[in-house]
Length: 612
Image 1 (cartoon, rainbow, N blue to C red):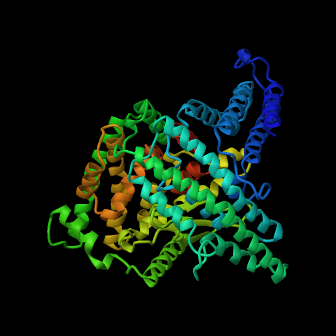
Image 2: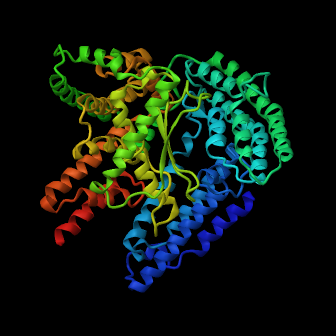
């Protein structure tokens, strides 16, 4: 299989090009018919590359709603990674046999995006062991159960057996995971000490309940499987029992040993862990962090520049918050006292009960439904896929982030999902509900990701994936946009919007502080406590997130700032010709793009409008 795939890539590199030697590029002019033909051929090539990549990736097949290798897992060993980068290099070589001047404008964009994607993969391949594949935010130990529960649907017996096959396959998959962790151990890429208890707790949760122990409470995987097959009408009760027995056997004989093996290794590895948190502690850590910032922000901004942008944005937002303090007639002019009030006053928090948690979820649904009604004011293109609001599952809620989004299936079988972590309601202030729903749902992640998946006449690779500055920049920008059409009528909710933007600005300071300036966790906590109103538990989780995901948190504010900057430039140039709906169409209907290409797209739109 591996040899065949690589051969296809090499053959493609030899046979695709039809425009002559690359040294001759730029000298020939092409007829409209030649441009159309070459563009069609190039797009077909790009789709073949994408399809072949997905064909090697059962995990992402399922995420996309494809059920080809439904009972398998994607290889995660380094041999597979080496094979993938070889295929990427061959695909890039193929791309360079094509004369970009022979392509139409949309295909030129695809050419450039694919080239960027390949070069990013190749240039950053050297850092493939500079991350923590098991941490409190995620990793195979928590993502695999969540994947099976949320992504692996069962509509017939074969799909039930595929679920069981995947349960059995967790053993070999975790063996590859352990192999990867040991390579990192040899390179002294070991998570900080605080990570270890979280992971152990998550692992224990996964192998708790029946059938692992005598309990009235079923294990979450066994409960999920049992529920899904109970809804199959074409199976007899005896067949369902047989399937449940097989699933129970797989859990006991494959899943439990895999998790116990991981925990045993993890407990030993903890003895080598330190309290140093930043990327600076790794070999060539500064160079790694510099590259991570470039990949995340899609800019050449340095760590120091990003740090300064954060400080300036924090100061600006503080001033806007002081205006809200006056609007609500707060008793003091001290911003810190207002922060303390917002953290502690019970009016801003649902009770930490089942009823309180469900009330929060229901309110989040209403916020999204209310926004749906207003979309015509802001958008030309709207997604067909629906979105639902779900609480993070109990087995991972203690360590998972506060909120996140998962994309819909391509075939419409699964809607987009806005997950909210309701483990501790003291960490989910009601004054931030509105902005959070807009960020994760509509008009944020769901609009951007679902629209990208539904685009027509562009290569598939542009419909999926994306860089942090674009994806998270759009979502943060989406927190602001509803205010411009009359939302956030409650000043406390508007404060919540500012609080979330402030949090992203403070991230620029704290992320670069930890990874470049050698800040301790306590320094980071102190900065958040002094400069944001977020609860202490929320701050703690966020800082721990930045530590295990160097640079990721910087993309939000850098991306939002760029989108706002481009919008203001367009407004100034176009005047009365500016249409916010058209601007959003420019931003959203080409799929995820780096900031420099987004700038070019907006500039081209402006010039076209000016000529009308």
